[in-house]
Image (tube, rainbow, N blue to C red; front, side, top):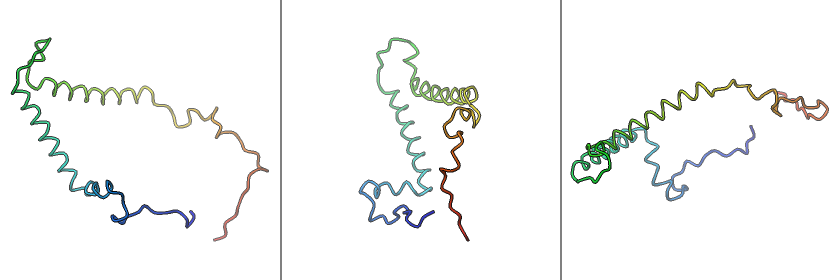
Length: 118
């Protein structure tokens, strides 16, 4: 590694405006706050579903919280389907290597080799 590599800037005063505002996300304690806020928001939206009259095409749409439950189940189904597809579509690490350009032998006379003395 060369000494020219730069490390990420850690001084908050040198970060852009949005970067300074989002620094609170770096604290692992705040992950719980985000989850609780999302749970409260979702519960509020399900509760709001009880407070108005729906004009629906199907009778199942009249059930309060139907779209919340349907959305959750479909999201879970997408995750399960993705895991199943991963098993089906997964290939070995060297699946493309016989035809990969990186697997071709490079002419030895064109390689510049350097020795490092420690």
